[in-house]
Length: 400
Ligand SMILES: [Zn+2]
Image 1 (cartoon, rainbow, N blue to C red):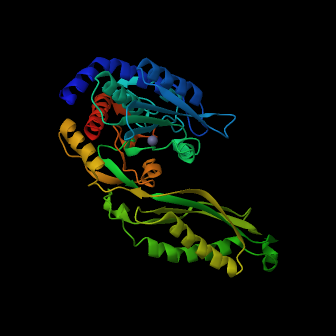
Image 2 (image 1 turned 120 degrees about the vertical axis):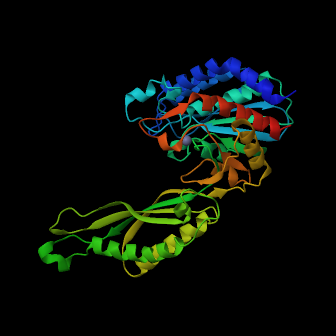
Image 3 (image 1 turned 135 degrees about the vertical axis):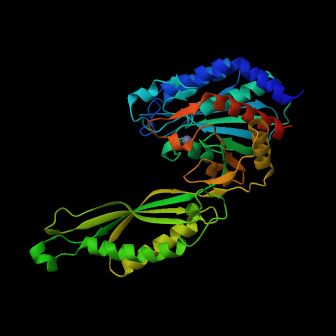
């Protein structure tokens, strides 16, 4: 049996159902923040899994009484080796309510979540269903892991599944359909976001000698960080990234700056953010310790400050020579007719949850990064079908 011909034939019979499912998901505003519509969107996902005969488990993350976070796991096949199809069904807030009314225009499905990533989640579910329907022989399982909360860091989604041991259990690999614009993302940067509030003392400008100028002190702190910036930004990743200038490690200061009350008063407090985006070759704890040691030295010099950690997450990277990477790239080449390139994702990516457990994890999706999160979010419908076939064939190849 040639799995490609069989799967393609079965997919052709389900094109309308897949498209209708993707449209339905887009029409449910699962906006995050704040985390709306998870129940409704989850119900729609479960209804489709039922319809396709895929058994499933719902895992609710605790701690969200107002807006419950539901995650779904579903497996097809037998044996412990599992290839995960991992996706999220939350979307960033819409620019206009129209985005939740999906429409088709020039062969594209238009709407919030079309590219990132409801259509592709529908595609992955259908990929598993096609393998089942066509009884493609597998030596392991395909695991669907569909999560909430990706757009806000994963606390009610992947992070929770990881905490309770349900993320990537028995995984031989993981694929997630983020909008990768035709490339495969095999790495992503980590992030540490801090807000530093430097303390001063208020005084009228005429009596400024009685005050302590928080702004001037903040400049001292920023200068000290500037030395670290100079050093870390000389580092470059060996992973491929476009454009090449983006290969440098990043320490950006002042993404948000606040302070003072008026031109004629000594500012009592000034705050600024530190955004550290480190490369896969760098380690979260080491980079965090270095930032904190600079801030500690400022404190020792008598600068009062408060430091908040707004976000932190690991970097990750998997070699493009890994057998799972090669199986994916080979399948893409067979279906698309061109070998895809591997690049590092410019942002955060859920492959990090898997990669840090030693699981080879990759993002490859039918959407374009350029339109994701934007007012014109859309996806080529043919690309959705094509990728659905690629997911099913990659599983057939890896679990042959
Ligand atoms: Zn996404």
